[in-house]
Length: 331
Image (tube, rainbow, N blue to C red; front, side, top):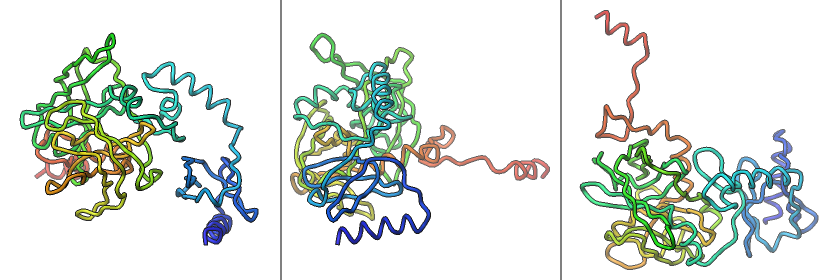
């Protein structure tokens, strides 16, 4: 069935006149082959980007993977340049592009202890007069993600950042925090630290929730009940938990009030979701917004831009067309 689906897919591409992009070649059984960008290689499957969609190929069907070596020298040079300029690991710097970082290749897995020491500084605590939550930096300029409900109806926001200094954690509070974009229905908010003395911040990489299998281990970092920098570990229970018409990641990693807006990680240290709720009547029933929804929000952040003239709503109302304004003036 898989071979038939792959054959039909390739035939449709050729018949439709869609050119194949140069990339990695995945040699399959029965002399079949697939060309695309290998996004992740796992023990049981390979995730391949074929241009307009991503395919998950069972490892049992893969005979050999031939990497595209043509772009390797340029990639290595780019990795060295970016790694030297940013406060991020080489794997993250390799794929940094624009507003946020999303590696093409899955970084190697590590223990939770190693990852917490490596990426923990990218997780922050978000405070308002009405409560607190968590968040994480997207880039070194101070843009960060949290939940909409963490800052709902609030404009006085502060962010607590923790830095490793001489082997100890140093806490710094930034009180000049601007609201950049809001999406109430996706429960996402984009903020920015605007303090004049703000340094370059360490930030996190966005991963691919589709590449994580149900049953794999994940972990969260946040401030449940105000207990900052709390780490909880569990497994990914399901990727298709439907609630209110939206799909969420479900996890056994403990999620409590204060975790909201914090990252859910895979064991490569990439963010695969933003934690935002739990079932209070049970244990080990936490939920996170898939990172794909976060990327969509960020890629279209101009459409969700926050307006100081209309602070009570996540929508920004644009000026009417010029001819309409002129007609109103004449009246």
